[in-house]
Length: 168
Image 1: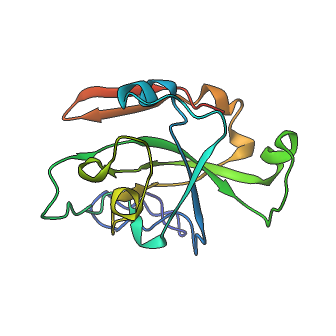
Image 2: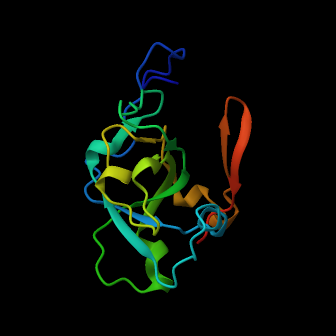
Image 3: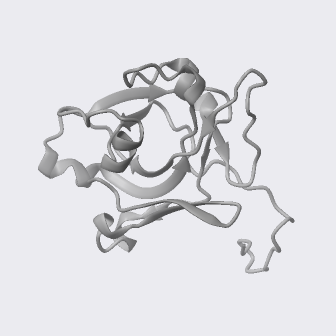
C-alpha cells in the first residue's frame, strides 16, 4: 500500500476497509452460474432471481467472517460485484453498463443448513453478519477491457474449488 505522501506501508501496518462507502441496498442474483445451479440440482431460472442483502453482511478484506455456532455447512461463493455509480431506474439492458462505475469481488457465503428443496435465499441463508467479505478494492470500469473475461477463481487451502467467467 502506498500512502498519500508516497511512503510505502507494509502489509499488516494498516487495516482494509470496505471499498464502497455507504453501499446502500445490495441487490444480488441467485443461480446465475449454470454450474452452481447444477451443483444444487436446480434448474437455472428463466428470469433473474433477485434477492437483497443487508449492509450488515459486508466485511472488509482480511477481516473475519463469523460462522454462527448452530451452522454445519457454510458454503463459499465467489462473485463479481458491479458497483453502481449513479442513480438508476428502469434501465434498459443495453444501457446497464453506463451505470457501473467499477468492479470488485466478494465471497457471498451461503448457509446451506437452511437451503430448502428449491432455491429461496432467505435471510437465514444469505444475510448474516460478516458473511460477505468484499474487496479489497474497486477497479474502475475504464480499466476493464472486457468484463466477460474476468475469470473468478476460489481457492480453499490452496486448492481451486471454483473457476468461472461471469455470466454477464
